Image (cartoon, rainbow, N blue to C red):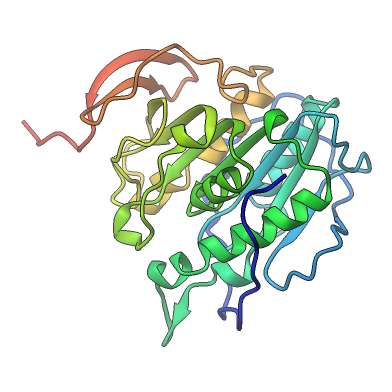
Length: 283
C-alpha cells in the first residue's frame, strides 16, 4: 500500500515538442512487433497522467512490472520511450510493461520558452497521481523495475518512495540540479539502482545510485543528444538479447561522488573505469 495521500494539479502547461534523438543508435536484432497501444483504465481521476501499455496482455499484478517514464517535453508515438517499452514487451513476454505518459505536465513552456524549473514544479504531483493509479492496478513494488530519463527519474523516485521501496531503478541521464528539482537519493527507495550519465550539462554529476555508469556518445554529439542517449542504448542492449542492464545485473561497483567506476562503450561493452565526474580539461 502506498504511504502518502495524492492530490490533483491545476492547469497543465502548453505546447509540445518531442526530443527525438539518435534513432541511428537503435539497432534491434529481431525488430519488436509493434503492439496495439492502449490506455489503461486505472479508475483514477487524473488529468495529468495516462498509463499506457503495448500489446494485448494488459497488466498482471503477479508479473514483473517495467515502468518507463519520460522527462521534459513528453512522449509521442514511435519515439524512444515507446520503442523501449515495445522492446521490453517483445523480449520479456512474461512481464507487464507500462509507459507513464505525463506529456501535458512536461511541456515546460512559459512566455514562449521551455523552462525546466516549470516542469520541476509538476514532478511530485504527477508522481502522486501515477502512484494512485498504480495502486488501483495492484502495483507490487517488490516486483517492479522503474526506468526513466531526465526528470522522469525523479517522477519514478517519488513513486518508489510512495510505495516504500521498489526492486530496481535504472536512471538514464538524470537531470542536473540546475533544472530546479532537488536530486533524490535512489538508494533510499530501491533495492538496486544504477544511474547512467554523460558529460552533458543537462546530466547531474550527483551521486544518487548504488553505482554510476558513464555512457560514451559519438564524437560531436551535442549536449541534448548526449542527455537523451541512455534510453536508446538500453533499447539496443535488450534487442541484442542482453538483460544485464535491464535486470541491473551489472559489474558490482560502489558509487563514488567523484568518479565513474563503470563505462558503457559505444560497441556495447560494459567495462571497469576510473573517470572523473566532470569533463576533464583538455591537454
